[in-house]
Length: 183
Image (cartoon, rainbow, N blue to C red):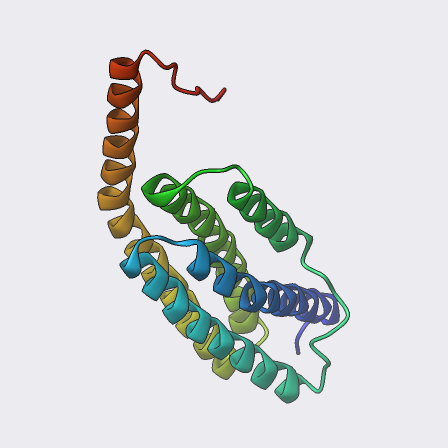
């Protein structure tokens, strides 16, 4: 017999994930639009479609539990989305902006991987193998997205560095100072 407190926690965490995924459905198009790399833009667009599937899986779980997925706002994702939005306002361009977008997206993926890992274990403990299977599928997709972002980062970070060096060299030749950013 499942522990009612653990079940309540499980439902609460699922609601948190439902909120997080829906926040991403609204945010990923903005990230895709901001990306200068075609490959990064396509990756964000692909993950948007996956994220819509994540929402559908969560809805299926809620339906089987006889629960509503609504009623909670994921503050963690809200903070991550806010940080990403601030990045867009910093004035970075091209590969440097793409490098920042990748960093923001990877923070989101790691947050989601931790959350899906936890609810998956709750599902197993509560005797919900179908839920666990759905959650594991989403967790695998989140890990694949993070891996793809890591691959893209290698090239894009190099491009960002090259752009920065070119800008510095151009400024040095003209006698201008290049703007520096505090860490």
